[in-house]
Image 1 (cartoon, rainbow, N blue to C red):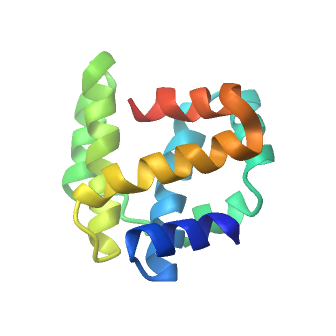
Image 2: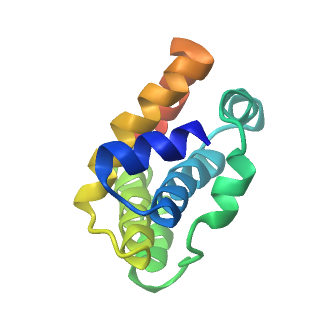
Length: 128
């Protein structure tokens, strides 16, 4: 898979880490985007379902509690909770939270090359 090659080569991570990290990011997009917007993203990323199923299922602990606490407050706190849940998942993969910031540009560039600016913007909005 082209995206996994880009992640493993440019970031020096193992394939299972690349798959899980990308899956966490795409799973977040699936949770935050409307069904139609996620379909546009999924159409641009071959094998997105496999990536999402490779993501660690941490859903709980501190990040789950943070998500529950902040989801009702909306705005920036919701995004903070989303990033906290990403950090928990990356930790489960043996990667530190700084790696999220390294995964995102590679994934955005890949999505743009496959689906164009509009699809990249959908994912970007979830991650900002």
